[in-house]
Length: 157
Image 1 (tube, rainbow, N blue to C red):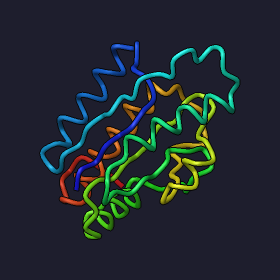
Image 2: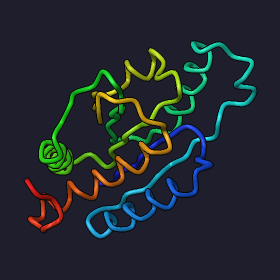
Image 3: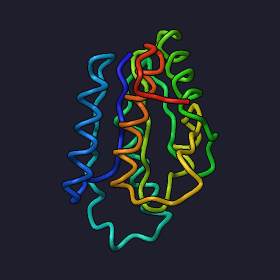
């Protein structure tokens, strides 16, 4: 199974970019993992939040491939422990899907069309974080999940 972290726009924070790359490289020994940075919506400053969500949603849905599942990183999603997240990944790997998309939305969240297409929502925290940091957090959690599944000593209960 291929894991793709989708996000709208590139990060300008070099530390976040390097942190995400660090964990993606570590996770790559277990499965193909990549960050897909979709381009920002053009003239985004001229759109209201709902219009922006729709435009971003179009980009997200166009990026999906066949035989894939879409999970949104969303504040209203299901809260999982790291062990539960590792079990979630194991279930997805066993299911035979080709690609698992974990999507970081834009500043205003997701459009109704993206919510309708999603297979589920995952909440990383009850706190609010900048999207640059979410890239690092999800990359680290994917890596952590694989080490849990392999019984490696990275995660401690």
